[in-house]
Image (cartoon, rainbow, N blue to C red; front, side, top):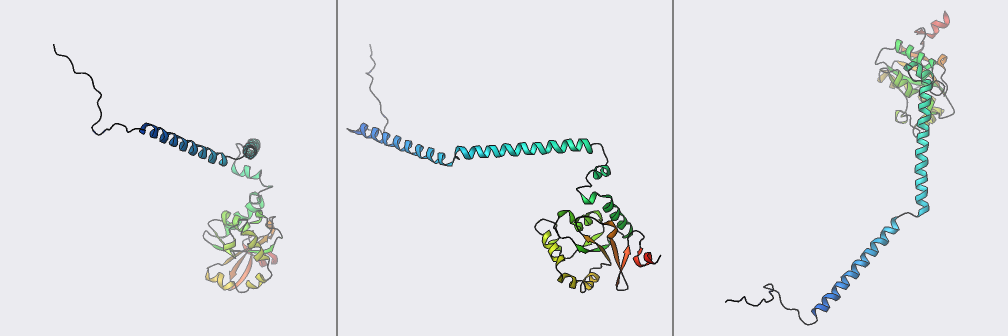
Length: 244
């Protein structure tokens, strides 16, 4: 009866028996690697800990964020209630009347003046905006050249120093300062040729102040080389109106 050969351990072809003391060396290497991993993890935890803000700073950020949210929600609620009470369901004209106290361009005087000028001047006409006097404050509600550009469209409104006439809070004070400068009045005598070269035959004269004075708004028309004051309500030279 045949018997199976005794079992013997098998090894890979390139495996060799461990030399004396090899097991202890591998154990030492494993302990060194583990120590390095622990040190690296400790360094990473330390770095993360330094990035986190201190508790007081974190609370301050959270409080500021919460305050901003509550403030925004409060304003939204206030304006929503105001709109429902004063403007809901009203036409654009009726809604503008509710804002006349704070928005000068919604006032009846400004609307009437701009409508009258659009009836006199054909679309595409070039008009030079020239203040008759300047206010002492840089109130953004007095940026009439911007409002006129919008409400007189497609009539084209020209101004001095257009690079300062963007109407921003940065450039607008400079535009005002230029027109308040007494030396600017001397330029008016020499700007007539420039206006003719640009094809401008009309001027719009009015006070550049926070309040709008419709009775002081008038046009000037270039007739035979002379600028003739033109009444916007009669569409006639102002001298004829005075004569009648």
